Length: 152
Image (cartoon, rainbow, N blue to C red; front, side, top):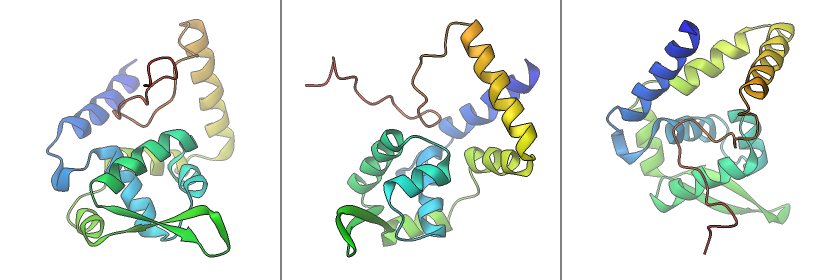
């Protein structure tokens, strides 16, 4: 439990900390991924952030609304958009330290594949035993998207 408490503590502090440029820790994590590979699709960004496409899409929508990300049609497939940072998004990335999410993702990537798989299985079994396995997995401390029953 102490390890979990440390993880929750660092993520909570990241979410409560001063949001430079009006971006949350999760949004800064997404901005850095787009900065590292301009022109990503939502699916590619989801893979890079280890999150679901709908979750990433919600975060990107907020970043577009804040003027930090632009969506451009993919010249090869007009049904798909490509993501680019705006000047405001680049300034946010340049002026901030790595987020807790980035540090945790880097630590996870440093584990070998066997350790990652064992960790994932153990966490899933724990959530199932606690009857919490059905909760949606959103990005850390981002609001849940509206459910179909409550969306108007």
